[in-house]
Length: 264
Image 1 (cartoon, rainbow, N blue to C red):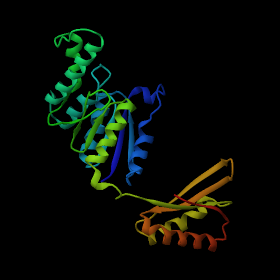
Image 2 (image 1 turned 30 degrees about the vertical axis):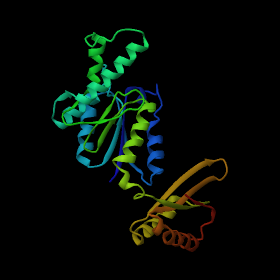
Image 3 (image 1 turned 45 degrees about the vertical axis):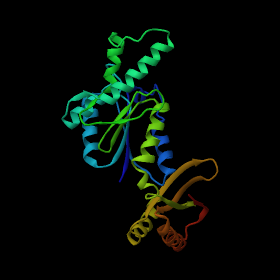
């Protein structure tokens, strides 16, 4: 199963806020022997969100969607998910209880009596309206839940809420996948060679080693190595060493000078 990430919010695209979800998703997945296959950033445009979610539902991938599940006019994710699925929004009974419990607590903290009919409280219940058939994703921060439909999981935009929710899903729903995507990587710092010269060797290595991917990362201003190419192979742990030795031999045959060797 592939893992994908969707981050929603005009504030990310405008630079008003910096995204923290992708780095955390990579960290959480990597710690469990999994990896992020793709990521998308979207603004607060309902039709665009619905189109992206339609693709996510159809993909069969496990997808974490962060942002836009509130109840203000610039939050469109819940409505877009329902549109993508062709189902109505409904107040989820468990979400209603959780949100009501949170509102009671907030009233008590202010020293006020809880009024379930107050317009503010009625508005807050919209945060529990999810596409028909959705499941609750618990939120340990303030109990206002996210939701899941199939393998697509809808989390708040706030990292302090979203990241524990993401971690819980990985450790429950996807626990059986832990370790199945663990990768190993070996590379050289190649000095004085152009990528065009290296490309035929890269293609030959990939053709000879089915499960291995060859990569090149050029740099023009590295503080230690200056202009160079990091050339390497990555793949399942048991397949990398043979491909790396073939890469070493190919570079020697081309009389290309190599520097530091790196293993990740």
